[in-house]
Length: 219
Image (cartoon, rainbow, N blue to C red):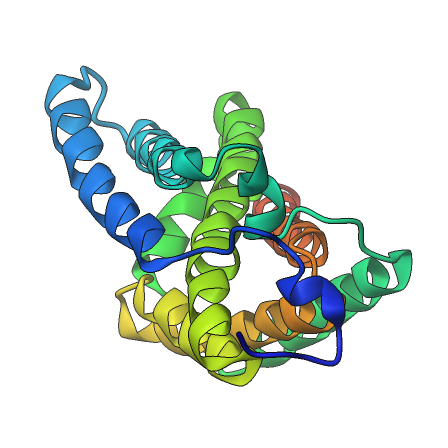
């Protein structure tokens, strides 16, 4: 098994294996397709909530065979406050920098437009700044990073999970904007040996965007 400067990265007794990745890929459509079919409300917020809710369940299915080792295998370990603070500041800096490119993904514009509606603000905040970043970190810096790091080491894990994270956003403008953030999150996962710094940084970034959309931007 690969080693790393931070021994916390590989100290779980049952690391993420190919079985967990396969279970996740199978569970996601098996849970998602009937859920979408049965969903009575097809609004954007309802679909976002359903998508990430199904993603959370698929992660739970994938790591269930690990038992009590699931949480440390995903990266739920203590992390120093310095990594949390550094990650949040670095994420804010990168987010501001990439925003200067001038790209405006249509999906993001639609979600932020909904967030500006007073009745939908709290739901948008909970979904876009709570559930969405939690699930994305579990999938990309938890499952995928853990599997790649266990097989090929942290360098491949950071790059591979960041590329997959960016590609999952589909729209080219969105892919370009989130790739640098994915690299920051991957670096945090590697250097801290924990999933917490990237979760906090990701939630902060999304929360700031939702609040800005609701309070600062013009209609």
